[in-house]
Image (cartoon, rainbow, N blue to C red; front, side, top):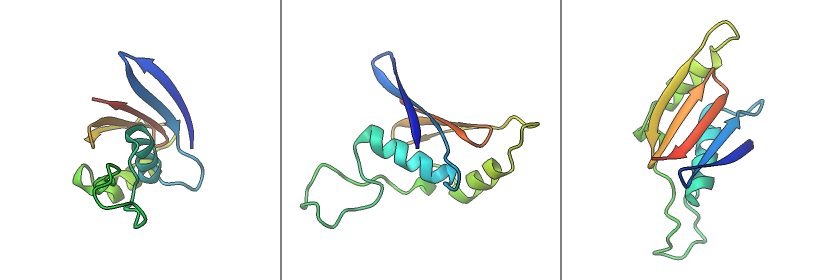
Length: 104
C-alpha cells in the first residue's frame, strides 16, 4: 500500500492507490486501521480492556462485495466515485483504485 499523508485542517488525509492483487476493501481497512491506530481484526494477545479495539466490520458501512465489484468494473473510459463514512472517517474511492481517507 502506498500512501501520501497530507496535513489539512490538522487532520490526516491519506491518498492511496490500491496495489495489484489487493482488493479495494482490504486497502480501505488497512488505511483506516493505520489512521485510527486500531487493528483490523482482534488480537488475542492484547490484554482485556486494551484501548486497541478492532475496527468494526466494513459491512456495517457499505457492502464490501458490491464495492469490490464496482471497482473491478472501472475502466479508463468510466469515472466512478463512491463515498461513505466508516469508523469516523470519510472514505472516497475514485475510478476503482484511488482511495482518499480523512477524519470527519
